[in-house]
Length: 210
Image 1 (cartoon, rainbow, N blue to C red):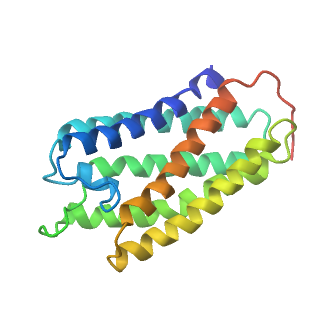
Image 2 (cartoon, rainbow, N blue to C red):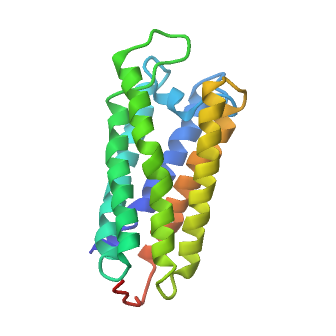
């Protein structure tokens, strides 16, 4: 059962992509290269209610994927990979709070919800970086999972680099923050989709006890 439920990772990644594309289409003048994705669901943003429904659905799918993948990995993967997936699950659980604390639109009044949005981001960033690294180094020890393990490590490097750049671009109001952020978040979503597909389609497992 848990193996079949890993399909929610693919569903979640597609929902996230759809919310970004749809949000840009519906918001006339929205600039994907300059604006953060969270602007789409910020307080007072056009179509906030509709797009928030997509992010809530994404969060549910991501949590179901994280839970099912963690339980499934416990059956054969090293503890390092299990810990990485547990961190991913915790990270997605914290991410759900974004729906309760939307971002303040640039130039608007600073609110408690908007400030909490920043705090949530600060909590999520290190977990987002750590998760693919641990999963990658763990799965590298499992026969037939070496490839996805290496890909997970590469994803961790990409998130580390572009996550750091995102913080620098945001803090200094450097143009093209939206582009840098999309590379960072896109790497995470693509990794979740591919890992979900890899687990969902796996036929034979090599047991590993370390």
